[in-house]
Length: 341
Image (cartoon, rainbow, N blue to C red; front, side, top):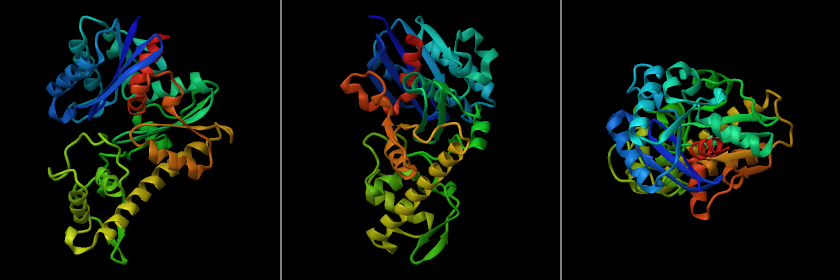
């Protein structure tokens, strides 16, 4: 049976999904922070290939071109395309260029604007094929995509990251890597508003770990201080954000502070969704489709918006053992399936 492996090359993770006969049979996420260089990406490709097996074709999409490893997005697209070719040779590789479809690797330089950070377009396009109309939302480790899909096609106002940030279709908050210092200027603590220290002392993974809402294996990055991934260590990191030590308050106080940061994240995503919905592109009965490591957060956003909600992985045919990973690896699964049509 013909197989296609889809790859999503991010700034922090490499994701892969294997499609056979239009069915996702395996999916995996491997930590590969590009700040550590392309050698780490090559290693991640090796780890993922060992789990994905051989295939007749590969399809790649990316967001990693934005990493400060590269001086420009164009350099990033060229470097990541070359890295994928090196890792996947000699099998045929198609590069996903979003609105331009798939292009050959040698055409990548002419389609930088279409290729750069187009992974969301693949997922939303697949939703359009399945449902016709919906609001697609995908919260990953770092960002949240909010994409209207109408009449079977992507109906986003923005395409580049800059355009999507302006339209509310890209919200820079994620389940794991988002810095707390970037999420708010102050927080309620000890009965008063406390300004936050502008240092990367803690992130959203700490918040969700304290609250017990961090899915297993969602946090594949190192902690801000290099210490343990335990509730106690997360409380200590969170305390630093308000200039305190964990021993300065009890566990309930740190849980309450974590709840406030989680609520701030919910509000940011809900505001983005309301802005996108205000475009009037979608009817009131259009569902919300959620995906990503932060899908549970998005279910709550959808509840607040009062819309019917569907899981991305329920829209596609997938092996039971792969279904849980399909949501986290939605763009990789999407490009694998789009390349199969």
